[in-house]
Image (cartoon, rainbow, N blue to C red; front, side, top):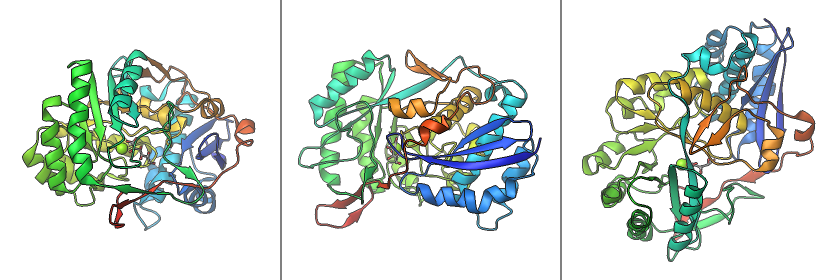
Length: 402
Ligand code: GCO
Ligand code: MG
């Protein structure tokens, strides 16, 4: 089953997406997401200029061999650009294999381990009351797990607060904007928010929170400890995890479950976190961590250490990634939860898909392959628009993690 054609489709139906389409001699095509927020064209070029010429003529059935060829064969390993490009190829090849064998991808990777996949949605508000109302809206939509982010008194803007509708999108057209940050104000305010949410919604609703890499280990330890009475499902990205041992300090101080990994690219970014049981959920994704094949390796390691999966699923991960994630989630034994930020109607129209949301869970559908496609003619009506994630400085003007 030779690969005869492959091309990259860059489109902007509300936000930028990079999609790889691989075609075989039998006329079967597979899709892979290669979107890297704010650096989209780097991956598009990596694929078009360097990867695609080496793919033509290869046997699309040899997924593992092609993965190793692209990983070991280039000498320059790892990194978000390389691993997103490899992920796109891997995902497209699983899609092709499913279509060729006339079965959904989840059947090729162990079959279903559950009936459907628990997902969490994003509630956010400009202030505490606004956030309480947003959580109520998500609960009314059927969500059983809700991430809550709120504007902070004394700060003009912060991470995670949408501009007023369901579609939180941090990337902005034009050059990067800058916001101002105070960890002190954040740490003083956040326990109040969750105290209020528990009073309002009781104990059963799963509540999550994303600190978005802004604390030091001891600040994160304080945050986790102060949130213990409100028993979060998880505290996400408490600290940047380049230094994996940072989590040891947080762990010594708090029983709040910890999640990290949305910006990790390989198993090498998280094996210490997993093996030392410093985290509870690993958030690596299909698109940024080497595709379905590599994500399964990470999940297998995690399973040995009681770490569960909780893949990133923001709007900058396309419906192709979402579909692939759901096949992965429904099959791996140690699945925990899947993030689900709804795409805009424009995005959904460009990427028709079989997956569905119902009662707080999602199902990938039973269409052969991944069950997602791209309407190329419609995609062509949404050309690429340069956009960046915001930047962040502390109140005295020092650059800080966004
Ligand atoms: C999340 C993430 C996102 C990222 C975004 C960056 O938990 O969903 O933190 O909001 O900031 O995906 O590209
Ligand atoms: Mg996050």
